[in-house]
Structures are given as structure tokens and as C-alpha cells.
Length: 92
Image 1 (cartoon, rainbow, N blue to C red):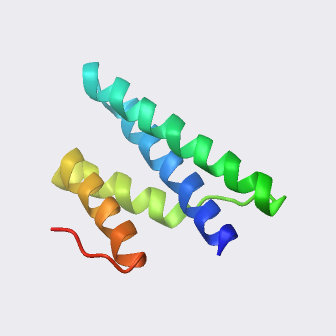
Image 2: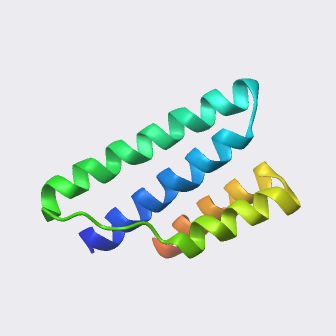
């Protein structure tokens, strides 16, 4: 379970980082902050697992594509909704 969460954190770090590089102004700064938070979460989990894990490249590509087609807000909300669904909570 820790490795799965660790993989999610590093994947989300990569997604936010990629989205930040395409954004400008305040959006870029906010997305960079979130990316850094996700990396910090990954590093905490890595201390417990003692292992490095690779990000899910398919998810990175998918959320990047969704952001280009449907917009940044849509892609981020979908990604966050997916996290809450995996944890057994539904947020609308």
C-alpha cells in the first residue's frame, strides 16, 4: 500500500510539474508549489518503503493531454477526483 501511494505521489509530482511548465504567472507558481508538495510526500513515503518507484508515464501523458484539450482546471479536478475515488470517498 505504501508503494502504491508512493507511485501516486511521484506521478502527481510529474503531472503538476509538466502543467506548471506550460503555465504562466500565478498558475505556474501555484502548480510548482503543489508539485513540490507531492515530491515531499513521495520522499516521506520513500523513507518508510526504502525503495524508489517510477512514475506512471501513461497517467502523466493522459493528464497532460486532458489539460491541453479540456483545460487545466478540468484535468486537475479529474486527477483529484480520481484520488478521492480510490480512497473510497466521492467529492463533487
